[in-house]
Amino acid sequence: MKKLLTLTALGTIMMAAQANASGFNLKEQSVAAQGNAFAGATAGAEDISYSYFNAAGLTRHKGTKIAVGGTYIAPRSKARESFATFPDGTTDGERYNNNIVHAAVAPNMYISHQLNDRWTLGASINVPFGMITKYDDEWAGKYHGTLSKVTTVTVTPMAAYKANEHLSLGAGFQMQYIKARLRNSTYTEYVHDVKTALEGDTFDIGYQLGAMYEFNESTRIGAGYRSEVKHKLKGDIEFSNNLGGALPNQDISARLTTPANFTIGAYHDLNDQWSVMAEYGRTFWSSFDELRIRGSQGVNSVTEERWKDTDFYAFGVSYKYNDQWKFRAGVAYDEGAVDEEYRTPRIPDAGRQWYALGVQYTQNENLTWNVGYTYIRAKDGRVKLKGQGGHIGDEARGDLEALYKNDIHILGLSLNYNF
Image 1 (spheres, rainbow, N blue to C red):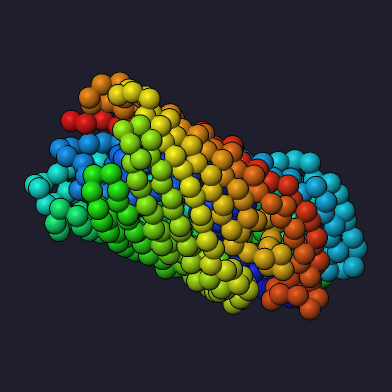
Image 2: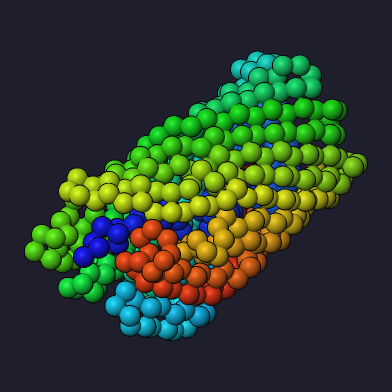
């Protein structure tokens, strides 16, 4: 009985279908930047929420400021076609018309304080990774996954230094907590449908670097880097039927690295009303090559992932109607992180186009509001997993083919207050 191979479902522990950037990354950390599809996010520094992408931009903000925002993310993903061949040779096929992903709110909060003409300090609280997918317990791909849920919280203290009238530098520490839950069915030669549940969490630290160069008051470029965070999750695994002790509940640990991100952007004021911006980003998903799982009572397995680095391109425009109203728009393209051969039903990730709009309203000299809306249209995500002769672990789950239709609606709201 290949009981341990079925545990490699944990190989997708941090994946949740149709997060809003490649893989399970969440770009929605600034409502103002969202209005431009995150074009110019590393160079704009229009409010302090842009510090998530580049802490150096904090030097453009005087006094003490606070920004609070939230983004409502409503994804849709359905397996229009799915066909499975189970390890015992039986088959199952269906059109899965239920939405496997669920709406969620991603909050964020920022604060900054100018110490003097050179130094500005800041801090942020963000949710940079996560989502949830859920299938019926008896769907065709039940051995590959029925529930995937991940939650992250990152606290980042930052500092920015104005080296001269043109160059600013920034840095910070990412203090990241991550928690995951997984469920799937486990196939054994005695009981074909053992419900399996896994849960784990951890807290680890990374860093953030940034630089901004201002050619003049109208034109600037910026670059930002958020490091990978190497996690070692600790938790447990439970079985609905332990087969007389053959599948004991036990403690487990798993190593996982959330990817590094590099972004570079440009911002330019054409005149007093019109501004244009652009952004390029690269997410280093290739660090997620495999996941190793070890248990206190015999679990020792490896799951192949083989994700690839992805590119992000964005272009945006802003129009300042008057001192109170500003309007934003942007388009972007984001590559998918995993090819068809390694795509799983836990995250039918694929390339996607972004279409974004935003409105800024300045209520008075201290209070500003931002609203952003984004529609993301994703390519079809096809899953083609082979059991026998496929990836490590899949021989205990069987074959699965599925075709996913995906899109996302995103609505953000934030306020910025100057003390």
